Length: 480
Image 1 (cartoon, rainbow, N blue to C red):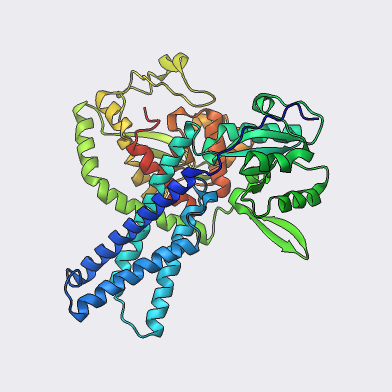
Image 2 (image 1 turned 45 degrees about the vertical axis):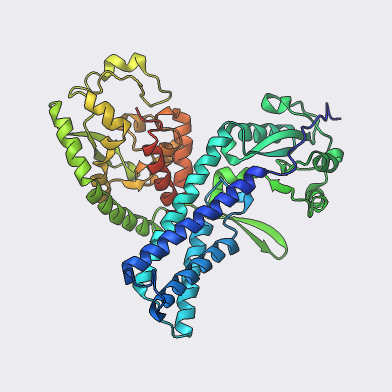
């Protein structure tokens, strides 16, 4: 029997979703307008920007067709679907798909109709437009995340399942507001007594679920565990919410293990989940290495003037410019990781004096006000400029642009069990740990993020992590 059913009524309409969708439409249109304008100027100059001659009209018509087709592609791929706003990589993938499909179709139509579309025009518009579109999506996602951190832009959900499953799901939702859901009630399918956050929520009987959801305008129902009626009961619940706009979500523990490597495939009427095993070699990993070389080289050339200034500033403090420290890389191999020196010359020797002041947990040493950090070092650390020399480690093949945190030999000696999986791929200049709290993370959180990356790495994930890193660095988050 339910303890109480005072479920909070939800807003009739989620206005924030519409506002974000309208903002995305405006941002997308602006990004595409900039891309086609720059492509026009870069390929044809000022011809076509004004004038009434046939050539000018043709150029303006081309820009208009490209822009409208692009916007139509973003709409057709549902890149602004409310269910993907602010979560996961699906949104970015749909933006990329819309871009490549649009340009592919335009190229095919031009070929079939024997139209001349300058390749230089497309070569400018496509990458620039995609970069601007992704930057716009990243900006609005940051705004949504900021609002969710203070309890706004959340979708109310009723969590259904056994006591243990419900407790776990409610706890996860409460600790991960960026996911966009907030548990507002629970339905327990056993006789257990919930603890933690779940114990403070209204409890509804399973037979009252559908009526309660409709009455309170709840937007989501999460099935966190098995139901007494099995799969047939889940289907019936889904039927009850048809055409109501209610999301029916099945929470699977497999997500923690397999994540993006899970694929649903019906076989002879049986719904089977196929799990791709992690791969640390082969074509995709070769592409990752090529990506590291190309992007690392470009980044090094762009950062060269800044690196020269930093090197001169570090030299004014006396001592060497670079700090070389032994780290453990892929498959346990050791290498000298390079950083701009941000501490006094004898920092390693003075470490023993500071161990008692360690603010970190597990195997990590952290000290927010470390007396060994120099004046220049404090500045370059805050701006993350001390890590720029690691680009040389990337080009030498010792590190990757994105990967697990590079551990010290002393840490690795104390690794146990699954933690050793961090060494299956190259450590990264940045990674999930860098964009999820950096120095503010505990040892356990750092390990969890690294292991997730090792199991689920992909080029798409790498690109998204690099974009998030740029935002984190510019915001000076978690660096000290």
